[in-house]
Image (cartoon, rainbow over all chains, first blue to last red):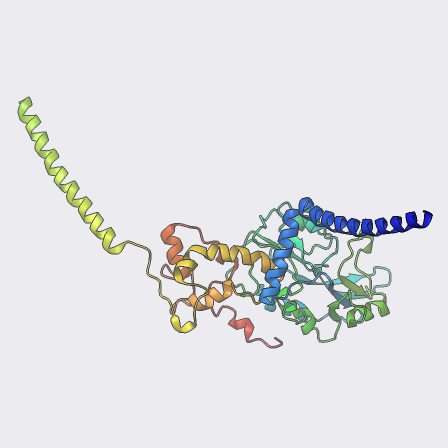
Length: 256
Length: 139
């Protein structure tokens, strides 16, 4: 009697388990469809379309970053600035109203008189204030950590220019006719360093990095512990500027 | 006196009506001969377009609208639909542009249908503008 009961119990429990598993999978599927049907279907659609065309996309597994070694940067050199302006079709700045995606900064310790010169640009923060304040969603962070302005949605309100603690955003005041085909830009939009996104997507490094004669700039994937940049950041304990703001910038500095 | 004046007015009106009819007929004839969508030059030697002309005429805004999100936000490069590719095929032989002159590919139609063409405020609509930088070293 007892044995029979326990047998039946086990049979029931096994049947139950398979039923439960089935119900759980159905419930999960239903939940996914009913909770976020738009998001779910859209993400599947995009994946399928991208796979069909064999198109590569910005991947969230990558975090592009820069390491700026100020101890190697020469005060009299502006190769990175020139390279940026050439690569992105920016006119060389004449007045304070002209755009600067990258600029040379000189820090001087008033007590010792020691000076350090290094380039500064958009820090490509993981928690970018420019994205937080953008009223239209034009300022955005790509999956691979590059912070960009979508000029199709930018209304030129300049909130991002005010919000950026690194003063990395610019505003285009005058009509532009000398754009490069791969770097569209025009009047009435905010803009900043794109980390040469058009080059990065082709597997190249940003123009400033390629132009640096002393190797003070290093570009790579901060997420990959074996990448040159990740190793060097670890080795030098390179820190971001204003790390107290906790924005987790993708641009790290050493010797500042 | 009054009667003669009325007759005089009626004659004037008839003459004006004749003039008006002639003018209308002339206008219609001119529009019929010179009007219609602008004839833009295509360059078959530059390769085939993404689709036939009717489809492109109807759907190119939709194609570009969909692609801009994919390229800018998702980072897809080398897509089938690319504005730079449109420019390189459709740029005029003299102007090397799709917007510089009234007869250029994009502008001719957009002027005709009175639809504002915003793309080339930011995108480069003229070929060869980049050549000065392209020839530079280090790229």
